[in-house]
Image (cartoon, rainbow, N blue to C red):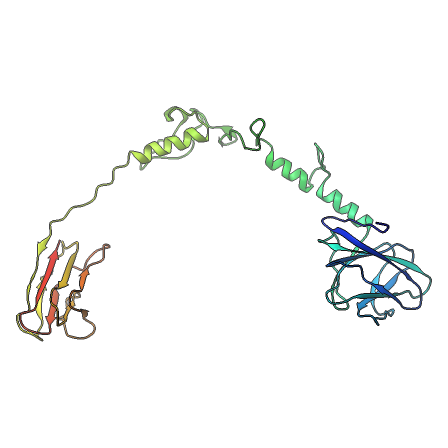
Length: 313
């Protein structure tokens, strides 16, 4: 297109031209969610965006000679411009995306981004670094190349190949082991102690896996003792289990089809209300796996003769 302009990720779609003088003039904005405005002349201009009757004054948004601004028109359909004196031309391009320009203030019904000149864009390109084998030092590309140096892609693919492991700037080997110890041992895992797979990352992980696999976890066993019985007198507390410092856990079930049983495992006497814990008919309680209290456990039932099942271990 005649006034085509493409900066960064911006995709041009339509364009227009606005001849600017010391009298405000307007033109329909090009279609597009984003508009770029380029002052192609040698005189500064002022612009405003809005509806059909929009007008610009020398108090409107300033676009200096050679600058490129970007606006998001929003609901605005027209742009007006004026100069303090002399004439210039604004090249307008509508499209989508975001050009690489510097941030400025807004005007009219949309937002603006402005202040980009060819000189500033050239400076940005220098800062980023040209795409070349040896980018300028301290540019973004130079830093990326430094980070990626040594990462080798497998032939004919985009998969990273073998990655070595270094300690103190040297490759891991029998004489330069990974500083990692097993248990309370002061001896580190070394290249010599690694299985087939070498002293690279694969061999190191294999060595760790073998040592983890050799760990044997022993679970403690316990004998369960029955503490089952009946409610001797309804409405009166009775002991379920005596204090036991070796207790690892316990459980209790209300075996009845009617009537509730309450228990207190804190060493206090059970009552038929809080803070005791209530078991409805058929309910079952087991102490947490993290451990059980060693204190005496008391229960109370609604009626005489109610049965319950209990275990202690």
